[in-house]
Every structure is written in structure tokens, then in C-alpha cells.
Image 1 (cartoon, rainbow, N blue to C red):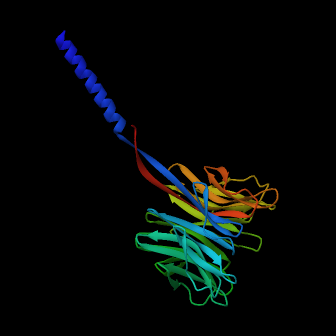
Image 2 (image 1 turned 135 degrees about the vertical axis):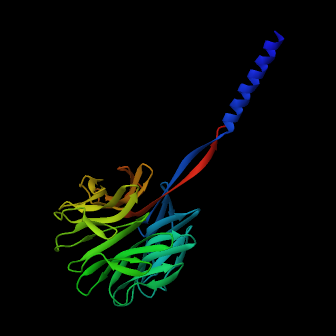
Amino acid sequence: MKTKFLLGLIAIFIIAGCSKDDDNNPSNEMETDVYVVGYEGNVAKLWKNGVATNLTDGNKNAAAQSVYVAGNDVYVTGYENNGTKDVAKLWKNGTGINLNNGNYNAAGRSVYVAGSDVYVAGYENNGIHDMAKVWKNGVETNLVNGTSSYIFSVHGSGNTIYVGGHESNGTKYVAKLWKNGTATNLSDGSRNTFLLSVFVSGNDVYATGYDEPSESQRVAKLWKNGVAENISDGSRQTVPASVYALGTDTYVAGYEFSGVKRIARLWKNGTATNLTNGNNNASAWSVYAAGNDVYMAGYEENAAAKKIAKIWKNGVATNLTDGSKDAEAKAVFVSQSERNHFNN
């Protein structure tokens, strides 16, 4: 009997000890933060998980165009008017700096961080026409020499940085991709072709934009490593604004004009899905894929023709603004981190 009693105490102790250890063992979970930037009224805005922060005070017109999260730092680029001109801006954790002197209109269109280097792609007017520019850690570089040109996107892999945009050849715009400052033409210049987004995944470089076979046509295009594919047939005006690749899947966000209204659209591996029903003008300006989820940022007008900033997650829309002022969500970035949770 004594032996059985001691064995029972040992068993209770082991069970209790195991239970306590289990309660204190961490379980790893992925925590997801969704960052969106854009504007509401005159105010440049940042939304984190749907909660808004003003980047400007609203005294002068401003808009945020792109967001990138690196570690604990949140970088946003866009512009703010100084009373006479739009000034290209970079905000780091809410604190803004001017990227140009404000003598001419300028804007940051895209931001990308590689290690300790922060790249902003955009343009500045030179008094005659707009000029493609890249600011690296605040220092500007002109990518073209005196011709009308625009940069809309910057992305990279390691020390290799790609920027995408277009440059006039005198009569037409040519889609161009710059790799570490060296340009490659993606179109032949026979008709207007515009490049709006670039994304690097492994060894593959994706770009999206559109060309104009005629004044009434806009054909959406996707380039992979310089090879073009049409993702619309030209029967309607179609504009793809953003590209993202994850694994073997490629996502493009934009809009198609129905003949009456713009319809927000997602192309996955070239197959189109409408995000809106066409009753109100809408567009998706940015796409980001994380795990099994696809996030898109854009806008849809309400019945009063006011633009409402929206984010779609797997096709389900959430309003970021109430429609009292014009607003658009221009870019989305998803940050995921592994967090330890203790059950005690």
C-alpha cells in the first residue's frame, strides 16, 4: 500500500509538472500589419490596420503615393504643396523631409529600402517638362537628359535596383526599365507605351503598364524579364497600375473602363476578376500578396461621386474613409513577423 501511495504521488507530480511546462511553452504565430497610404481631402494619410495617421496638416494639398516597411521603420513618399509648387517628400516614421527645393513641381511616386539605403523614384519639372529622378538617401540622380520622362516605380534585389517608367522619343512615350541606372527599352516607340510598376522576385523582373494602339484603346501589358504579354484585348480601355509576384503566382491591379464607369480589377496569372460592379467609378492602384491573402488598395466613388479610399482583402472591401471628402488609397504594404505567445 505504501508503494502504491508513493507511485501515485510521483504520477501527480509528473502530470502537474508537464502541465505547467506546457502552459509556459511559447507558440509561434504570424502577426500581420497592413499599411496603406493615400490622401483624404488635402491631407496625406497613413493607415495602419485601418487606423489613420495624418502625415500633413491639411493647410496645403498633399498626398502619399507609396509605403515601404523595413524593420521598425515606416517610409512613405509623395508630395506636399508649398503654396505654389508640389514638393517631393519622404516621411520616415511620420517625420517628413523635402527631396527638392520647391522651385518646380515634383513628386515621389515609389519608395524602396535595401539595407541602409532608401530609394525614392519620381519626377521633377525642369521648367519645360517633367524629368525622371531617383533620390538615394536624399541625393538626386537624373535618369534622362532633358527629355520628358516619368518614373513610377522602384524595386530591387540585393544591390541591384530597378526603376520603371517611360520617356518621350519626341513623338511617343517609350516604356523603359533602368537597372542600376542603365536603361532598357521595353517598347519600340511606334506608339505610346507607359510603364507604371516594377517588381523583382528572385531572378525574375516583372513590370506592368499599357500601350495605346489608338486614341480610344489602352491595352494592359505584363512584362516578365523583358518579354511582353497582353492581359487585355484592347476592346476596352484598361490600365494596370501595380504588379506583385509570389511563388508561381503573378498579381496585377488596375481598372477597366466599361464604356460608362471604371471597374476595379485584379488579374491573377492573366485571369481577370472584377472587384466592383461597375455602378460607380473605381480603381485598384496597388496589390500585395502575403501567404494565402491578397490585399489591394484603391477607391470607389459613392452615389454623390465622392471617392472613398478602400482596401480589398481577398476581394472583400473595407472602407478607410466615410465619403465626406474625396479620398484614395494609393499603395498597400503588408508586414508579417513571428511573435511568441505564452499560455500561462
